[in-house]
Length: 176
Image 1: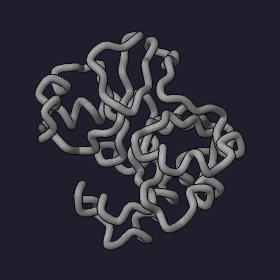
Image 2 (image 1 turned 180 degrees about the vertical axis):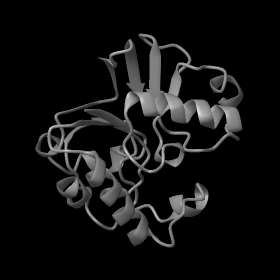
Image 3 (image 1 turned 45 degrees about the vertical axis):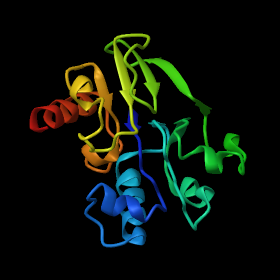
Image 4 (image 1 turned 60 degrees about the vertical axis):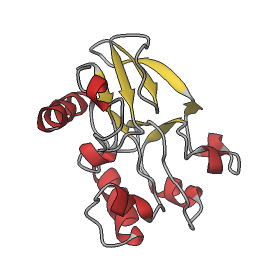
């Protein structure tokens, strides 16, 4: 199975308040995200992390990565740059890049942490915006049915399949 997820922000205390996440503290959030991931993902599954895996964490990112099941591919987000230079990425990821183009089974998709207006393929799978509809580009992005936000804040805090990603984004657009 292939899954998508972004903007976990493991270790980032302020993200709870900024995104109205339903957690009391950072420890609860980290443990809930890891448990939800491992309940869903099996060792042979692939998870595309579309940026911002960890941010400002007092715990080294390797400690989270060791606990997560599946094969992981990192699309580097703005908050990943602070930690990726300090670890051997090949120990935890089957690949990493600033963007990738993959076949989803329903067409080609560009994976990039940042929302893009022009991209290769039929779909854009992005992160970065969390559940924030106040960003200046939201009014345009909202009209792009083929732009899919992989952020945990709109995808139930779990890695999701492509079909779930489409359904969750349709629901989010409809309600915002």
